[in-house]
Image (cartoon, rainbow, N blue to C red; front, side, top):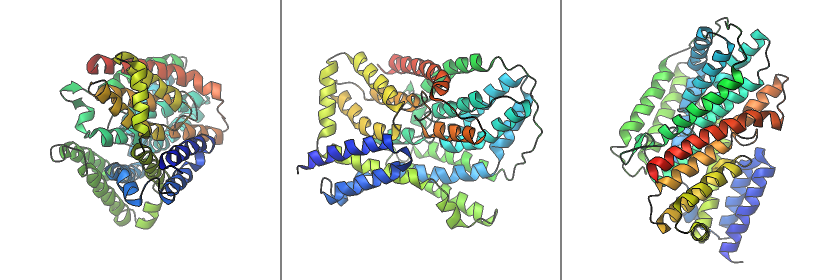
Length: 422
């Protein structure tokens, strides 16, 4: 059978299984990549180089740093202080969402939700209120701000890898305000949505302080990691290797800290990292790499370019809102990996800078997941915690918050990107 047909068939089957078996996505991606190699739709050497090892280094290293940061209890300690200083419960909820967003800009989204959730649930128990809206607010705030920096979440890392963007490029790129500012404008618009949802809670808030900081060292490790990534842009202009190495080094430092200070076994700490998502990323890189090698990415970009003609705004709008729609129901990682090269190819055919399509695609794919409870891993985790607390979340209840939040955030960010990058 033709290699092109094999690669497309395996891609489609894998995508369908991602939707039907979300808890088995890593298994599906690995099996799909192995089938492609066995069927010779892609060689082992080509599969190896299809994997973006710089992105993998950033992801795994950051996971280790974030895990140590979470164990230090600094985020939970700060959350208690913020809640106690808020003038009422509504503002406390908003403050928790803001804190979630801040942490999520530097820590993976699921880890962020796990850091902040105990504080939110404790507040809800003390005041005898339903924690559902607050937990949904935490999840979607995490997903939003995870896009703001290079190390916030896998989609940002993927964009950085494809577009050769370093840490500082997410703030200012080619002399113009970049993704960070688009996300913050979206955050401002979505904050208004959350305000109207939480404003009815006027009870005075006061938590009994229970959190104690175990160590401030992991916080300094995280700060130095961010500083080092910012400096790396001066030495690795093409964003090809240095950021991944830096993150792996800081990850190793975090693991050694856990061993010698907290007496944790290094092997146990390594095994506790999110290897499922890591294997998922590796598999997806190979699956999409096979599509690229066999000409399908070029075909899709030619088709879309012909569809939009010379109308750049139409092409930009189609990319963004298609990304939103698909990511509301499907994991954004495989979609983004498949569409990033399409966006670059479309930009070349339309003779424009790829930044417009790339930034719009990232925003649409990352924020579209906030519409439904299955659109992002952070949403699934938040809903799981709520169910455990006796508050199962219905699809429509999540969408009542997720949909207006997403529309507000995406509209603001989408217009910002068009204004500066058209």
